[in-house]
Length: 121
Image (cartoon, rainbow, N blue to C red; front, top):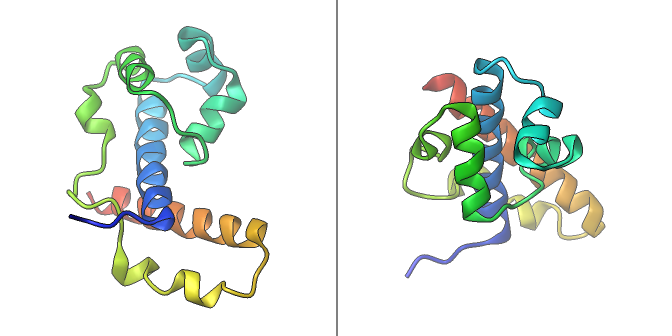
């Protein structure tokens, strides 16, 4: 069984958010326009795209439909939900930091990795 860590989940949601943002941009929609169509607030869409907000599966499918995308295209391509090589020791380096600092740095690194992977594909 694969162990899932918080940083792996943050990486996964950052990757999903980057793909949603890319699809939204490609569809020519603003965050506000997408939010209106799916019954979210603009800040909820922004949080989703930043990987800070997790959503229910039925809402994920609704978002994909509104973007004219197959839900599978909004999920990360690799089967894993983390990148141990890049993120593995991050918790160790942040051990003495405050919780808010750890969350900020982990989210930022996860977003950078997701953006990098998106540009590579």
